[in-house]
Image 1 (cartoon, rainbow over the protein chains, first blue to last red):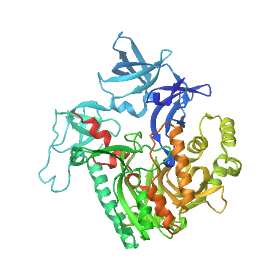
Image 2: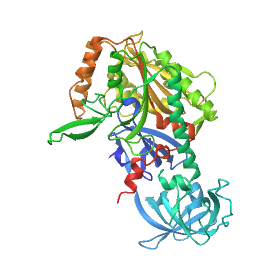
Image 3: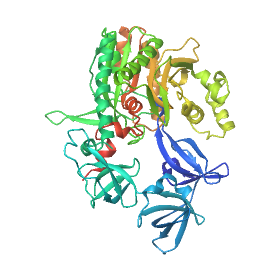
Image 4: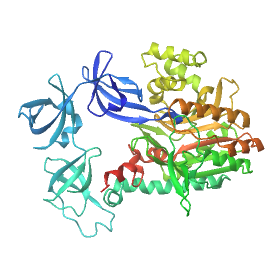
Length: 186
Length: 343
């Protein structure tokens, strides 16, 4: 049995004979009351999303997931292929499982993959990822006076984000993968 | 995240911060127009309030000759404002930073947060609900915003907001009569039946069910005030008509808790007993303890009218008006932000 303090993104909780991957969690302190943790979880059996709130300190059954840093290689059909950097073994993960995060994948990106009984149960993209800008419209005179402080740029993996007008083609930028927004120059 | 670079380079975060500035101004404008006076009370106090589960942040002050005095950053300006009611002020409000330790850095909490607290003496909870509803609608109208957004829900501001008793929402979402679950034993049994962990005191058991079965669905279609809380959970409120419940309400919008209000307990003896009880609970929970605020009791002995008061989290209110998903997006240099940049 584990404690609620171990609830983090990517951990797997066993409940009612099903396994759930925690996709997000938040602390709630209702009306000056005790502390609780609200976890958003996805059933590994059905893919259904549920929400569960635990009192801090309560026992939770967290299964032993192995977290491995893996490198993204390429996409093959509906599968994304990753390589375990320790033993060079490759693993395939279905695109549905990665969901919207797939847009952040790029060749060589290191992703934290949770493995349970040899099967991928969670993937975590780094909070900030560095990308090379491959397309950026040149800044136009009058941009800032017209109130345009950003423009759309295209990144090396095809992802499009809004970046400040001073960003040029060939530069590297950091993107916040929580919000899909420009964060800083890399 | 919102630091100077974000405000410079990210129009969405800049827009949120601009709205924050405007919402603070409109809040002040609303209360001054409604005949309230803006008070100001110390942020560092001694002794702090006694809520069993809150952790005030300790600070040390030193006199020039090096004598140490321990103070605490207030968790809300409640006690100080009640003393002002005893001094004869009738309608007062305060926008102030409050601090709570051991709460999360981001999400729905930041250890330092902005509170708007106001009192009407005399005042009924119904009037406080009216003030709250009008405040949101005033800000919405001035900003041209018709819908609030929280946890993926879009909630219209317009129309009469819902007002339901705690008993009614337990009936609706859990299908039970709360009258029969007002003791730890019965509530524990209910937790067992519903498959929840059965450890803890009444309040813990209550919230285990409330947070799972009720809260996520509150105020999803329109904002809702939930009133009349089990008396065991209200050490600062007067009893309701049915004395098993107390005059307390909370506001929920889109599943987010926004505000907590009391029909203020004005009976000095009862208040002293309740605070002593809370102090005992703190001791049992292994929390730091301090004396009961004698000046508050003295203020109640001298007499304050039957007052109503409320504390509303301003950062969360700004989240609703801006659609920010994390409280850190509405705060310039949140705690997490500064820790991130520590060098």
